[in-house]
Length: 119
Image (tube, rainbow, N blue to C red; front, side, top):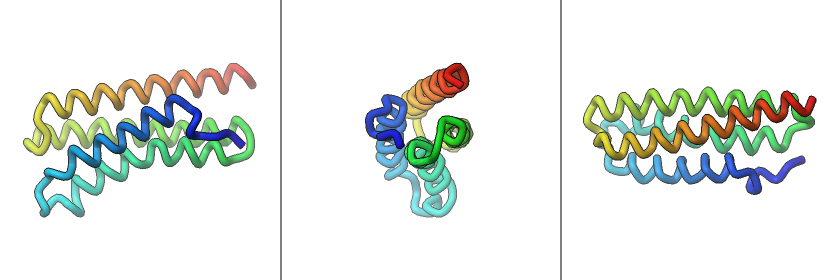
């Protein structure tokens, strides 16, 4: 069992989640059960899946959860674009969150490749 808190990718994903929560605080109340919830859930799913994968048996299962985290990161990227185009996020804020998301995706990819190489 790995300690997920020691993984740089988990730390970055967790910070991204905190930043997403801060950014979505200003969303209109009518979006609470719509886009606000979707963005927050996809963001929180990234570090949650990394953590869950760390608690599983073996690298194959860990890798599977990293792939799920990658899917959540791609979902978040889409929702951030949608929020910008709906004028819920300004371009600067969306750009910053998207940059963080892309960095997390790159780190996930590198970790997935490392797991495959180690097998």
